[in-house]
Each structure stands twice: as C-alpha cells, then as structure tokens.
Length: 271
Image (cartoon, rainbow, N blue to C red; front, side, top):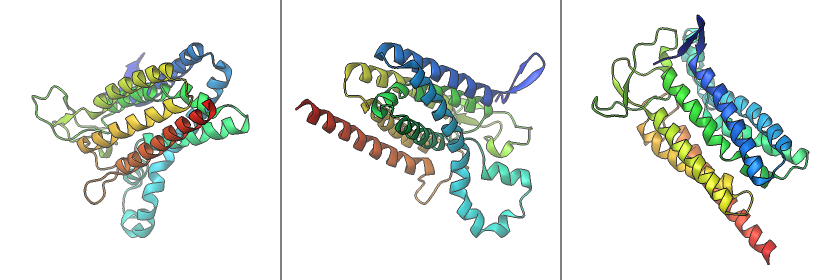
C-alpha cells in the first residue's frame, strides 16, 4: 500500500495523482482520435471537460444516493457512529459507475444544447474512458481500496497490504493477508478494451457504435470481476450480487440496444 507519494518532502495522495494522470491520458487519447478521425479538436476537448466535471459529480454522489434510504430508516443506529467513521462509510471512495453516468449525461446534454453530433462525439470519447479508468484503478491499488478476495500467497496476482494508519482503515483490506490485486487486473482489462474499441471504430463507419462496444465489454468485465472483490463497502445484496453488478446488467443491455439502434439506423440510411 502506498497511499501517499513523497515528492520534495510533500505527501501527495497517490489516488488523486493517478486520477489527474488518468484525465491527462484520456485527453491525449481524445486528441489522438480527433486527428485520426478528422474531428473538431475544440469540440471534443470541450465535451471531454464537461464529461469530466459531470463524472466527478456522479462519482461522488452515487454512493450517498444508494445509501441514503438505509440511513433514513436506521438513523438511530448511524447517529451513534463517530462522524469520521460515518462519512467514510457513507461517502467512501469515488464510484466509477456514478462517474460514467454523470459524465455521460453531462456530455450528451452539452452536445444537444450546442448541436454537436452525439454519435460521432461519443466515439471520440469511447477509447479515452477505459484509458483514464485504468490509471484510476492503479490509484486504487496504491490506496488499498477496491481490493480483492483473499488469495494464496503463491498467487502471482496476490498482494499483501500493511496496516493503514491515516484514519481510513475502513476502506483498506485486512493487513498482512494475501489479497487478489483486482484493481491491477481491471486496469489491464481496461487497456485491452480501449485497444479493441479503437480498432472497431477504425474498421466500422457507423458512428456511435464504438461507445456501445465499450459499454458491453466493460459491463461484462466488471460483472465478472465483482465476484473476486473482497470489499463489502460497495454494497452486496441477497445472492451475493453487488450494486455494480446490477448496474453492469443495465449498462450491457443499454449498450446492446444502442448498438442495434445505430446499426438499424445506418441500414435505413444506406437504402
């Protein structure tokens, strides 16, 4: 675990630093896409910044929104918790799916308002999403959050974390126990998804389907990886299904419907 990076005697949160690097990398992918697809760089960058702002808001708000009913119903129990412990449980870390929803809504509304093509724009952004997310997951690896289930010490994908002493132990894995490095696995999967999406976009002329391919691939990946997550703060319901798995089902379904819609629309235009 390396929650802080020491630079010039300054402690910089590793998670925050990786988030910033992820945003920079994502913007680099957006610019690269604009050059290859002959798309307006100005429009794409503006939409990307709007999506980032919406994504940050969504990533912060999703977990409190999901937990709010439980807090209201069981307020007597939660009112006895120390403020710091309650906030760590109530807010916790940023939630990617909240960011994806918030960023998508913000980007689409912006495009609609300024009459920018939504299908072309989302395809410009599609490969940037998993690239930026990969950096975020490395930040999770450094911070010790979003950790995996207990693993064998001989497992090459296992990692052992020390005890966290900065007051955020509620988000950290049990110290001294081999834990599956799920953030690193997801980061690698995200890079692979980015490559597949870029290749698909370049080989297919139907704008708008690239984001659908991303949604289907990531939704399936996330649904599977959730079975190997060991942190319970993300919410687990009857049958062992997590909040993220429920959202993944909707993401895959919505992406498949969008893919079908764009494909059908382009066939009608060709006729």
